[in-house]
Length: 355
Image (cartoon, rainbow, N blue to C red; front, side, top):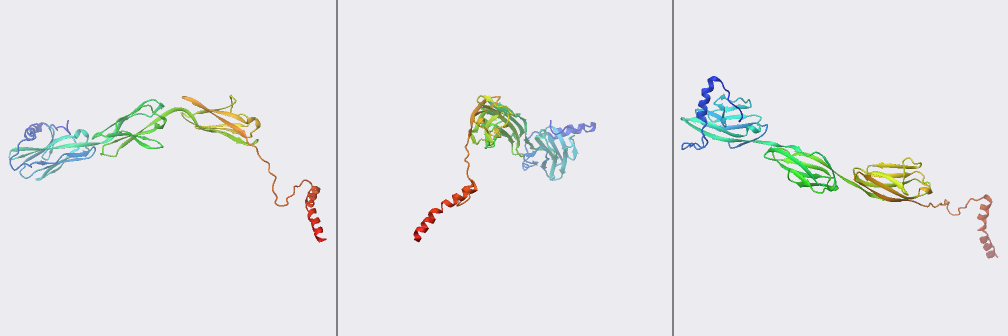
């Protein structure tokens, strides 16, 4: 159905029939010589959904009757409104122009509109087509997904609009923003951990700004240890062994020495775990603590391990330096004797030269 229907009142029924007979003339009825441009309607009218559309028909003083029709529905006949829709209003009815306005246009208003005039008892018509554009809208999109590495995924993004919007997918990751495909459906075969992150669906048709939605893709994979280095610590000092592992979900850590698991809370030893890092801390390293330790990282997809060595570093005791002629204070008597002995050769040499 068109914009609106008839306003049926008993006394107007005959007029309605007359108007339909008068104005509903098929498009393309021959026009008399010299009238090729009369009546003249607008070219196709394009408006966005929610805006107002103005339909104009250029006429002259030969016109005796005028009307606007939508398909088989009479909207206005002269100044009389035959439409129930309050959105349709008369803008002008002069000797040169006959125009109406359709407010808050919607998609069901799209279609042909006819300006029909009566002059010298000869009806003539001119048609204009109303085109309604609709901003893009994403009506269906996949939910966030968690999947194991190596499996296949399919993402969906359905959009509506007039004209039909173009749908594109992009991969948003910390390393780069990459174009993926131009389609409503995105297929990824054998997904890798590098392909995890947000996938952005964009729908655009140049009617309004593109509409953007995102889907988060989490790729699960077993742990791998990225860093595990041994360290040397002197006896009695604080020492730390560190183990870093990447995994989704986050890895759980365990520490072993000589195939024996280290229990949290052991005297002098502490384990600190974070999502991707574990530390084994010795507050006062003893000879017994030195040796080979094993860090084990695991999640529901698997586990891995690495050996880390805690080894001893010897310290060198240095005697404080006190400058030239420094004397070690062993005892008062010994110090004085040590200070005089080196003067004897000089004294003997001095006496020999004198005589």
